[in-house]
Each structure stands twice: as C-alpha cells, then as structure tokens.
Image 1 (cartoon, rainbow, N blue to C red):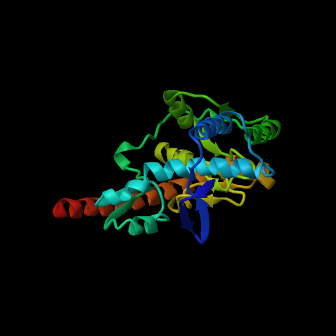
Image 2 (cartoon, rainbow, N blue to C red; image 1 turned 30 degrees about the vertical axis):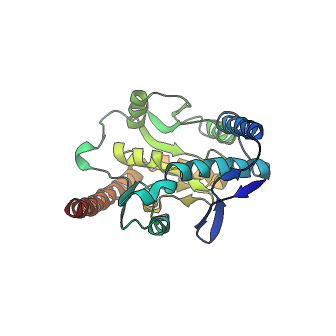
Image 3 (cartoon, rainbow, N blue to C red; image 1 turned 90 degrees about the vertical axis):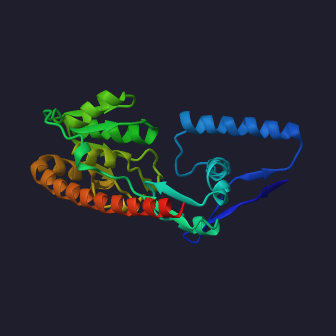
Amino acid sequence: SLKVNQYIKIQNNYFYRGFLIKISSLFKIAVTIFIKLMSFIHLYQFDFRKKRNKLVNTILLGIYFKEIYNNTYKHLNKFDFSFQLGLDDDYNHLIRDKKILHHHTLPFLLTRKNNGESSLTKKYDLLFTGRITNSRERFLTKIKENFKNYNIYISEIIDEKLWIEKIQQSKYILNINQYDDQSFVSVAKIFRGLEYNVPNITQIDNLNMSPKYMENYYFKFSKNNFCENIKNYIKNYDYYFKVFQKMREEYYLFSEIEEKKFLKFLNQINYKY
C-alpha cells in the first residue's frame, strides 16, 4: 500500500513530501524505473499545460519534494545552526520545528566592486535566452511577428561567456514563463540584469514573486497587452534606464544591510562555538 509519510504546511496548504512504498522488492524496482522515466519525460519532453494529467502531476511533485526532504529537512535535527541562500523566510517554521536555535536567511547580494557593468554598444533591443518550451515558442513567434523592426537576440543554448557578452550588448533582458500555468517568477535573469546593469522585462500574469525581496527591481508586462508594454519600454529606453539605476542603487543598499546582518550572525556563531 502507499502511505504518505510527510506533510509540510505552507501558507495554510498541505503538500505531499514523498511516498513510502511498502510492497515487494520487485514492485519497488518497477516503481523506481517509472519514477526515473517520468522525471526524464518531465525535463526533456513534456510542456505541461493547464489540463495536464493530475495523477502525473501528483507523482512528479512527490518526486520533487521527496528529494528536497531527503537532502535537507530530514537531517536538520543534526545541526546546531543553519542558513539558507537566496530564499524568503517561508520555511523558518520548519527550522524551529527541528529545534535549530541559530538560523539566518541570506538574500542574493549585489556588491559594487564586483558589478559587471560594461560600455559595450547596445546592439539588441531585447535578449531572450533559455529553454524554449511550447509555451515560450508560441510567445516568441508573436514577438518576431510584432517586432520586425527591432533587433532581438534569441538563443536556447548559450555558453556563459557569450551569454554575458549578449547581456551587456542588450537594452533589456526578456523574462517569459516556461509554461502557460506557471505560478512563480524566475529571478535568475532579474539578478543577472542587476549585476550587469541591464533592465529586466518580466511577464507577471498572476504570478508570485519568489523570493519576494526581488519584487521591486524589474519592469513588468502582461501577455494580454505585451506588444504595447514592451514597445513602450524600448521606445522610452533612456527614461526607464534612469529608473533602473534607482532600482539598482536601492538593491545595493539592501545588499549592504543584509551583508551586515549575516556578518553579525556569523560572529554570534563564532562566539558560541
């Protein structure tokens, strides 16, 4: 039989954190092969849509959260202190449940001395890099159709050095959802934009920003009126770039404050241990 052995309460909702299977060894092997196969399909072939199979979703979420639980929270009671990098404080109740007395959340920090700002000429109005799912392909097709007079760079696979060069040559980084029913904003490109002084234009259709402290450091557009939104950003680039400089300075100050908090946390640990 299947027995769900772990519940995690997050914002008054419960998520399954893995499955405990108590059947024959042969069946366990079959289940393991099935799980690996479903993981492969999810990563490389499926572009899940709103009407996707709920059973498949449940299995895939179980796999994902089981890995998180086995690799992290399952072992927390063995530690005296901990810190998490880049996340919000949403999981702090789990830390308290494990009786860890000293915990700190360290946001992504932007330092002035290591910024990647460049004087390279802006060759592109928009830059998109990343996995091109079916959802993204449909959207990028519309971009190509409506922005024929603009310079746009699109690449699914790109090495780190070339990626940085293209970022520095672009006016904006375009950040679009991988899936139609995606519920969160990916912040990796937003932080890269802050690092290399290139504003992000991010799709925000009913999405949650995670981590929340990144909420005020990018420009937004909606899929419903994307053409008007994005063309406005490009047309008024000089104005929005000045606005972005204020955002960036605010993030520098935020980073400096958070760095001091983290150093204070480390000093407390060093003093006690």
